[in-house]
Length: 214
Ligand SMILES: N[C@@H](CCC(=O)N[C@@H](CS)C(=O)NCC(=O)O)C(=O)O
Image 1 (cartoon, protein in one colour):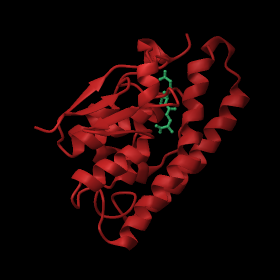
Image 2 (cartoon, protein in one colour; image 1 turned 90 degrees about the vertical axis):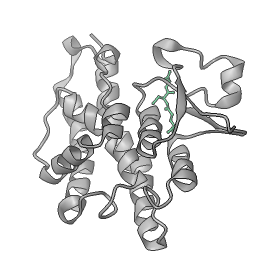
Image 3 (tube, protein in one colour; image 1 turned 45 degrees about the vertical axis):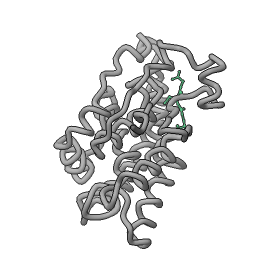
């Protein structure tokens, strides 16, 4: 029998959450091992052999060992997705890749900067102007998503793709942090659509209060 898929990484890591969501979405059996954050373990030579960056996630499927969350999600989509989260049509696939690459280059750095601010900065020393500058940058990226979703339910079209998985992981934290959020009705409708999916709720809606600076 094939070895079970093994995912290394704490459940409250955004990049691990993408992989959990994809695994759940595809109904795959897997084992997740808590490493990173308060669990430590990333500096062990055994872990470094799985991910030389000493970051989570790391991933194993049989004799395949790999890292980089988006590449892992793409692998799962290609191997087990059939036509589910990995469109076969090259033109549709191009749009999925576009939103996925944009998430890496632009969107994730923008929204994660807000989270990192709350992780590193105790509320007693919050600098309103500095926080606003970070939040404005993230909101500009959310606005691009909002405009895109004006005429479609998911980022690349009519059905959920792995682009929704890598970008939608932002929504739980973004909506649960104490920040000013302009009304983005299409983002909100997308969020509600994702909340109806048990795989999103299990993978992404993971409490994070204990990660924030007091
Ligand atoms: N580009 C990498 C980034 C990985 C990354 O930055 N992981 C963070 C958590 S989201 C990490 O390992 N932090 C150290 C820790 O958890 O202890 C990916 O997408 O897999």
